[in-house]
Figure 1 (spheres, rainbow over the protein chains, first blue to last red):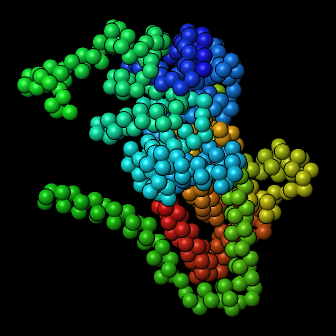
Figure 2 (figure 1 turned 90 degrees about the horizontal axis):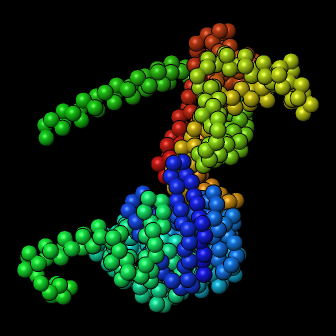
Figure 3 (figure 1 turned 180 degrees about the vertical axis):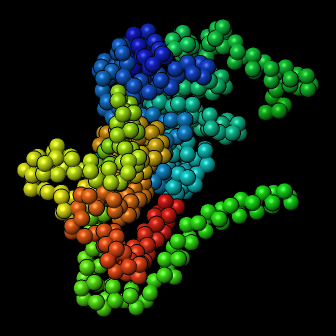
Amino acid sequence: MIEIKDLYVKLGNFVLRINSLTIHENEYLVVMGPSGVGKTVFLHTLAGFIKPKRGVIKYNNIDLTMEPPEKRGFAIIPQDYGLFPHMTVYENIAFGLVIRKTDRRKIDELVKKYAEIMEITHLLNRKPNTLSGGEKQRVALARALIIKPRIILLDEPFSNLDPILRVKMIEFLKKLRRQLRFTAIHVTHDIIEALELADRIAYIHEGELKGVFTPLEFINTPYAKPYMNELALVYKRLKQLGIHDISIII
Amino acid sequence: MLKIEKFLLTLAIIASLGILFVLAPIIALFIAVDPNTLYKTWFADPLLSSQARDALLLTLEAAFASSLVLTIIGIPLSYFLTRYSFRGKNIVEAIIDIPLMIPHAVAGIMIMLAYSRRGLLGPLLSLTGIRIEDSFWGIVATMMFVSFPIMIDTLKLGYLNIDESIELVARSMGASRLNTFVKITLPLLVPSIVAGFLLSWARAVSEVGAILIVAYYPKSINILVFEWFNTYGLKYAVSLSFVLVLFSLVVFILLKTVVRK
């Protein structure tokens, strides 16, 4: 369980405040909010790249606030996936285990296992610059999950994918969660991702956590209105086109 | 279609004139080489050839030592300058670029004022047994001074081209700052290190003005070109220059190949 209390981060003129937030074991928390409200700053503070002015970040009652990133066990996947360009897919996935000086045979076994789960076994000898966006995403997930982190921090993971691939990846991530069980914080400004994946949705606006809601609660808050309007627009257009039952086009 | 072709043609003409401007002196030098004098300078005449070979070897060695020390200093310095913000960073960067802006003779005088026996840090250097006036280390120090900004700027560009987010990912995967640097940053910096090394080496090899003031002896090839031009005339100076230009060409073809990779 991760507990965040009275977190106060200041970067120049920008301020981020999280009064209280708890993320439970195996929970999938989606952090929503418009662009530039501090979602990435929040992830980077959790990961240890930004030191808060005050506040506490605890994992199972262990205070991690001042711990360096490598001691936290929080694996981050940035927007552009952050694959190591000079390493093969195999070496990328194995990286965390190599750092932990895991036995070579064990590394090989685990890399192959995770590559199979991620359906990327055929890519193991390739370099990241030869992969598609979806493939890169799977490699990044394998690399993060293989070290069994306390939490995975996903920073707008699908923003670089086309809509078809995005839907596929959402489904894949849902399947992965059922298969592997992991705790995650997923930052996005996409309502579909949030509703599809979240156990709970945390909403940040103007540098402040406004609340944490179940998906159903969230769509009834005023914060969800702009996102729901976007969905309503699509629905309205479909109706204009004579499509009243959406199931006929799915 | 015709317009585009005209546009490209204009660009090509301007570009060709530019290349011709640099190529003409090289071709002129190659034409001016007298094979007999060249042979005499580098092989036949025992006195001249030993002078020429010693000077060339000395220059190559000093430039190599200078670039090596600069690489060792440049890797951490450029890391700080690109990965951290601190008060006075602009001033530090301006100081690094000073050797680019000043006349070479002035650079020589400054080095003498700082590091010669009677210079600001001369007594300190004497304790280590290093003397810079008229010595190999004087040539190295001068070459380092004039090549410093080239090495630092090349490495800075290299660091800036490495996406910082992958360093952050490595740290979040459990790699310490040192491990991240060794396993992620440094391998990705290798092309810039090679480029910085070759560029600063080339800059060092081409230096005359400052070396004239700091270390006339032992004679480096540049000093020898200057001296032979005054003593023996153009033919002999050309024989020395020809080999230097050939070396530079090889180095830069190598550099371009590395950068392209």
